[in-house]
Image (tube, rainbow, N blue to C red; front, side, top):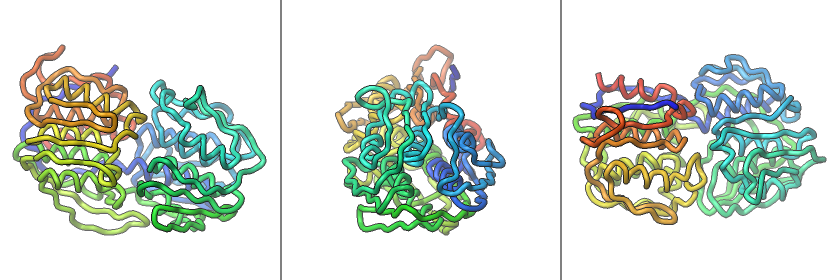
Length: 436
């Protein structure tokens, strides 16, 4: 088990780039695999999650050059060119991989088994099993909540449906839309609030017959995707850790270059600004279907705020690091409408509430969020709960953690941190580069 030790830091200064966006990396390799022609993907996230997606597609007959690196050449096999894998597809810790690939493989003429590590096998999959089964797919998991492994059996085809999702989830929406590429007729997904739209943008970019109407998005089956080249922007979810670090470490000023600023993802910027963070967004441009910019954050005295609804949905992956910003802020921060976080890599609400208590922060857990009383963060020995975002958030807290006692001498000690490699390889090195 890897252990990370973080000591209190001086000002963070300079500019840095973060790895490619994980959500876009997953989708780029999936859609490139089923397109006609060759797609070149630059800036691909060479982290374990997205690499596991690429490996799964390679196991189904897709030739991918540069696998394991950031520059991929994907020789697409067309919508119907995937082949039956020789064994179970191990997707590691990646919920995005298992959910989106379930949609991609639903209704095929061959079967597949999708599995993962001990943490992924604890994540319920009914939210995708239900709509895919409504389409005619033969898919099931373990127990009432359909935990992985998921088994997808061959079937004679699937049909389009009009699905009103009870939750706003890009993974659910994407799984159904990907299945819709193969369905007879039109498939429509309607959400309570708009979730991130990377799948829609990329499908349009590659020629899918896709239409959007408010909170609904529809795709018509029987078409084709045309290979395109993609430049994957820096991951805003990874940048968020460095943004909060700069905002809470006195004297800091950090610029993060070439970051994706898709409007469905920029909740973290709006939330930090509500908390009085000094943030500027410059050099805004488009490269392909996604907007990109440089983000500069300066230290400021943060204040508590209320976070809920659509604002929180646009920052759902950033919840753990938002908790650290709230812990460092003056006053009270209330987070609501976050029940979705109980089925992430960990129960992120319970995990963060427990770890914040260990580092001296007053926190009250609620069914759909928490109440955080900002103040002094103290060094302690803490645990990631097998969750990469929890691990990195606690590391950022360590940059301003005072005193405390731990099993090792001084500093914040975070147990079980090998999971950081799933989304932000080079995280510690990025922090260190800003401390010089």
